[in-house]
Image (cartoon, rainbow, N blue to C red; front, side, top):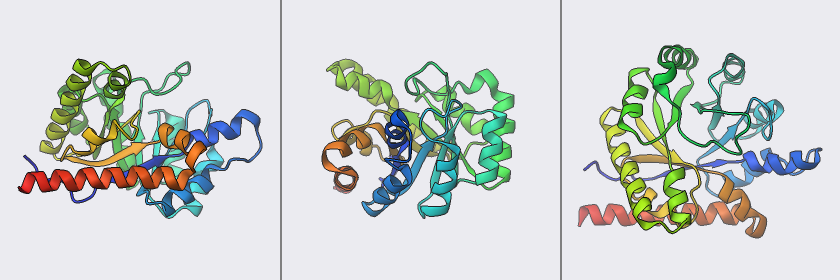
Length: 258
């Protein structure tokens, strides 16, 4: 088994601060302010999804995040020519390619790399030529992970949504099955020299088994943290998540060396 990473990075997705702002218009609440507060609370990076319909994050938000936040910016985006041009203009630290359908409430599953393999290969290479690290948001499938390596991705982000949904529904059998897929997917990705991240739907409870997966380097968490922040504040929500992740990782390290 691969040694447990010393630190598991936390990327905080601030999309839904913008969702609340856009419900009424105007400038409040400001996702850039949320990103700065998350940074002060221990976030290691900021994630923002610039959707084609601009339902939450705006082009101006991306520009201001790049100008005002020192943390690495992970730009989630569809693989379209418009988004490629935006990424090349703003030069985020990383670009995470995600599937996107206008009618979906949130990203419902991983990217199907095989469906557009040649196109995605060229898209990935264009981003990498600009020194943007490229991540592909995929289901924990060996077929998709292998395809990600073949087209030159630097990172795979494993979709944890099905695992979290099973946990929420109390379906222990399905939860265990999906967690096993994540464990095996992370190990396989690391074998292929991919950096492995994970995210989607994680909360204070479901993050624990995922944070213990030794090959994972980063978790990206957004909706839950912004929801929790309504009650406790962004600093407290991020601090609590950071604490849980640190404790799980330290425990996993101790167990591995015992």
